[in-house]
Length: 280
Image: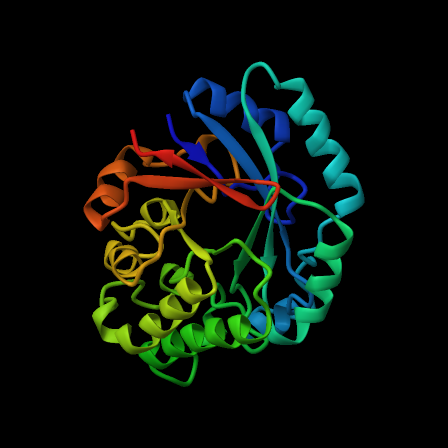
């Protein structure tokens, strides 16, 4: 009976899931509610800039743009259709880059959402999803640059509710998280967490880390615990599901992780305001 507040539908470039199918699966799994947070990544790099030169050719990666004028009415209709079956909130996941701060501010001034996730998907022109991001340097240096990019984003843009999957980069590193720990990057991760706490911003527990075989959520349990130690109170729960079968992925592990980190509540947003829900 948890809320899943990070998921994607066919309005996102990387999903083919129909919104109604996501709602139906959430009901089948007994979720308390959902928030759909489709992707908007302005200036997503072309494939030949983000993938290894071998075999890349001149083909370009589809843009991660969101037709907000179509998205919002469709999500409102979905809310109305399931009003007596499942609470549905309307969110967005913004792919943050420092030069996009003004553009994101203009978007959020024009459109209203229940929930805004700010995430780092592109680091200095490259998505860590692609192997080229790691070429010519150590994995540790690549990870550190990713964390530095989060600080750069927070420094120029703060109009988000939570920062998504703070250690997203470890999903795709050459060794994933075999050599990765919070302690190895504690200096910069603590700086990120302190800034988020000071701004009254939250983080999420993203169970896609389990889906990708990391054995931990994104971010790891140590980071979630550290956020709480530093005074952080806002934490949302999300599967980062891009298909119905991934909704609520491994949510059975979530209550214990949150309680062990010191949380008694998790957070759900409506109209950009947090609502605290007791951990079952």
